[in-house]
Length: 394
Image (cartoon, rainbow, N blue to C red; front, top):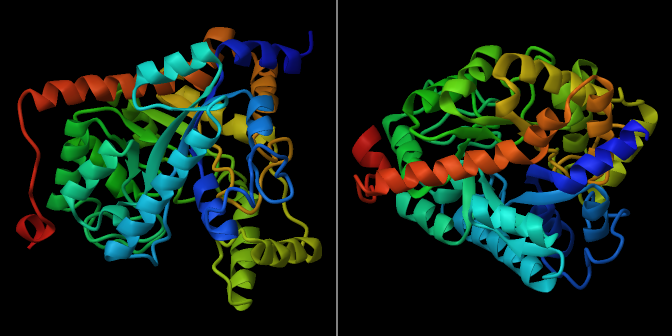
């Protein structure tokens, strides 16, 4: 039996929990949520990294669908756009019940696995989505959002981003209150995209395990979006999980400078550098043709996972591909069919079946279960926080 065959056998029992897929935003940008025009029951490989058949081929058993909105949407506009993102995930689940099932808890994830359906959870990407309102945070949780990334690419008033100039030194008093309220309601604190100071402040504050929904190792690729070793080393005490991403500019050092030039080219064409519409991809592909791209592979991701396992331990790592949220993907991991190739690479490197089962399924399910347990305990001791940004940060 080949290692790829072994990977498929393992994934049949312990499918992939992927921490981050931006399909909802792609549906917004490409067809304004018209699911008849971009039906993921059909082959959408010309337009998307994701469709139902390819999720099945890739052995995905649970997906955190990102309900991300861009940071140029602010205030109530960000809240409304996030609600629209939540709504399209609900539409997808209702439209494809043989394949997708709503999941709110770790037990829901296990039930989906037993049924052979893809557990569909949601994660909000960026604290700007709650417009500095703990009530809005709670409302998102009621609607099914099970993690929130504290920032996206820009700072918010109460937390510093990895890719913006330091402003508050990590988390403000209100930022720490957001973390505490997330712990109380059972929403996972996601530390992808945040500054290292924010990571450390969150770990100091949280009473529940955290996640990194799509981040890799800074020691392997020195990019601010990645996780420093001291933070990885703190995960065992916290109980959290770091889910390695596949985005080439975060995992391959040679791709960092190349992507910066590609981003500048997008802006020169009047486009947002994260634009993955047909127009945006036409510009990106033309740039790639003129300036060949340094190519990441499944082995590149495996290098990060090897390091993350060494520093954080096997119980504290997972996978968060970031499909449909990036213009470029690694060779062998071009779309959501690629996960077995990564597992085959890890088998080649000597990873055991028990270790791989933790990586693909068990760690992510356990971290949500632990967050639920913490929430039950905290709710028995304190009620909802109605603190405001002005009250705590002046």
